[in-house]
Length: 417
Image 1 (cartoon, rainbow, N blue to C red):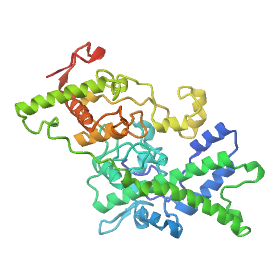
Image 2: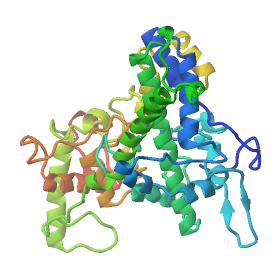
Image 3: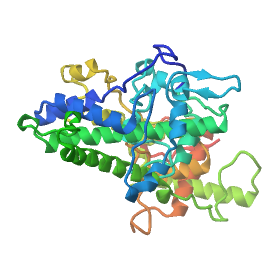
């Protein structure tokens, strides 16, 4: 997420790139011609969200007035447009300055450098973000997005933007949310056009040409689109309510640490905790080894895809070049397998603190094959909080373990060095 627009930082960009990949997928799956739907969707999004140089935020009804508070229009305006600054070092065009090279002008993850990066840059339009404090299926909080901006994503091309001013970080947080909301609304409109409307009989999703000739019908169309946008924004506005609070580990659970020496009693308790964590890792409840492998080196299931690839390849074989070709021509990135993390390196993209690992275990990683763990008491067969801390201790200790050749059989030959 660095660099400037390949077309030039100061080049006006009048249009967001439409999601033709998803539209083509829906055309093929439904046997529909959605050319007019593309026109309608593009027009509606422009009326609600503006352009890359002049962003807007939907004018929600009085009943949904709180939705206007999710992002601030002045922040969107500072993030958007051409890159420039004044004598007071106030920067404008921050998204194009720092993000567009990888994430693209529409937040589609199809920036000029995207196909050369591994992993690919995030496509914001699904509303899915991996590293957050909310469970799978929930939107991240603004604090979550800010955390990723300041910390970066280790092991990827996403750098830390800690050097930016506080207000500049807030500007980018709001703009990422703006692009994600816009992308989600776009997908909903395309889906509705494909599944519920019949363009061959004259149905239209959003027809600007009737604004004057049939104001009542146009108002109905406009309200339908605004209502869809409101439902998307509500998911973001209430994200804080779904945050998973990481509990403090019990006093009898010393966490694995290299920052201080442990007493003999603490070391014995930690060794016991690690042994329990190893058993859970290999066992059927946590079932970590099925993907990460019995060695924890990421050598379990290695032929899966992330949610972004599964989304546009639904209904086709991701390995079939003939089926992929129409989508690749539209700019889709060649499918790659998503590989489980090698846990023995101690490098975690979502953070390596015990609290980070706790969240990844309990919440899962949205958009990836990493599931949320079943927890007690909601699931009597699930893990307890103490079980999770055992797993955390086991994971924290892995980089300092030796591994023998036959450890992949049962894992019983691991020994701490």
